Length: 283
Image 1 (cartoon, one colour):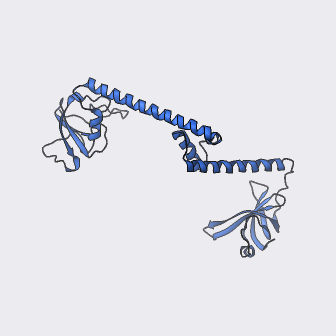
Image 2 (tube, rainbow, N blue to C red):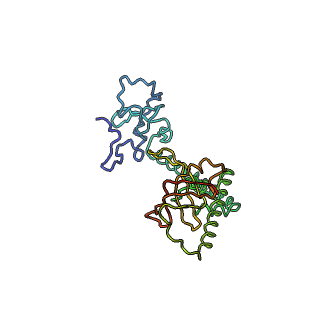
Image 3 (tube, rainbow, N blue to C red):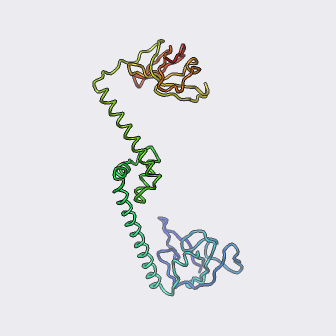
């Protein structure tokens, strides 16, 4: 009767005799070692797919052949698995070797943990404010690079000099942004809400908040700008041709004037879409 390799139960767990949790090294007799790509299999019937370790299930090149004594089948183990298993004469020796290896791995993991904690303590003493900033980074943070910096700190306990420099720049930028938002909130606290944006064909005058090229399947590439009026209402409009050809270093921050047909947004009474802009000028 042959040995069944890679047998699984209804939950997908291996239940064959060669699985890592139940293998008994005393049941195997060493035969030979071969480089699998050149190994001749004439008159040899392997118990399982060739090129696969019957112990861990991974693909192998250097192969150690063993005879499984209870059935007489020839089975293959990868060279690394054979070293890890340390094929000794009995199960007790094998389990002792596994316990020693597990203990060594645990000691190594503990040393690495202690080293990481020591690095983190040293880094925290020098960059405490930065550590606090990174530890507060939310898992849903949209800026991936910032999330990666927080992950590196958590994994290694410290950051490289370049990572530290980048993290400080992001921290400063975030603080400046929050300070601006706070100042705006203070300034607008007692400021009455503007009337809904005026609709219809009219003159629009204000400051360009932003501008960008926007692709449209119908119109192609179109230069758009967002204009903030003096009453804080905003208008989104195509940059008029006369402004497009005007001489300026950058459109952002420029004060402009044009005529257009403004339609109020359904979602925001203080935001309008302007069409057919004409007579545009940079003031």
